[in-house]
Image 1 (tube, one colour):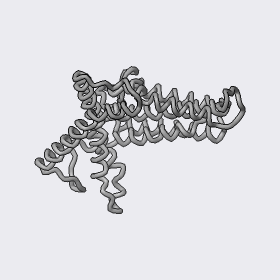
Image 2 (cartoon, rainbow, N blue to C red):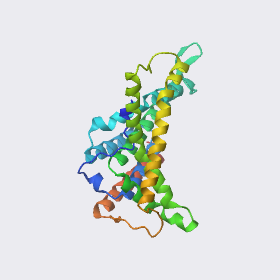
Image 3 (cartoon, rainbow, N blue to C red):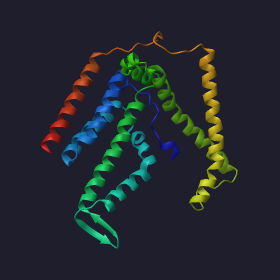
Image 4 (tube, rainbow, N blue to C red):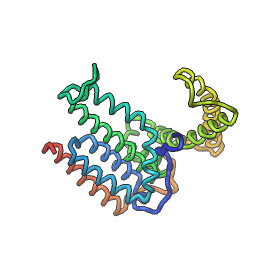
Amino acid sequence: MIRDITIGQYYPAKSVLHRLDPRTKFLGTLGFLISVFLFHTFLGYAVATAFLVAMIAISKVPVKFMFKGLKAIVMILLITVVFNIILTPGEVLWRFGIIKVTREGLVLAGRMAIRLVYLVIGSSIMTLTTTPNQLTDGLERLLRPLNKIRVPVHEIAMMMSIALRFIPILLEETDKIMKAQIARGADFENGNLIQKAKNMVPILVPLFISAFRRANDLAMAMEARCYHGGEHRTQMKPLHYEKRDYAAYGILVAYLAVGVAFRMAGL
């Protein structure tokens, strides 16, 4: 499961999405996530599905690699679906003791499952097609107006991008530690919940030590290179919009307009 988490990873490819400005991808992802909550009918989700499929095809990221990230949220997805089915009041379709399944619960569970899956895939498309440096520059440019009220925009963007970049590194480190502990006879599968929690200690301790060591090394490297952010910091590749970015904004606005129209019409 550790290897199945794709959020934070970058997949190099030559596609239109890879060449888009990171600000365009940030706002596009935000618009898509908003649209997921605007739609609430089968027809609406069909439109969102068509848009998502088109983005996956344009990104040139393998579909198997894209959907591999869903394996990490299977348990959360199952818990969400089950609780919505049995705890939502409404027309009872099936009853077993105190457990009852309602029509409204099934509908709500379906909506929540679709939204959760689309949230993960939509976010993964952005991180898979954008390098950490681009994420930092794009987020910093989008939040630049907050500098007027003395918000440390550059520091916030840097912390978020470093945290996002550390996700695949720590996952890889966790996988190595688990394999090393299994080779020494550790058992992470058997036993009750308390025993499984105790078995995680040989993983968490070296993982935290490794994370702090990497953070310290990164801080020392940045200090040795005299790195300090601020308004006078220059960029090797300054961001600027191209025609494809304006076209992407036009497509996004049209897509959101359809979402709003469907919401107002109850479709």
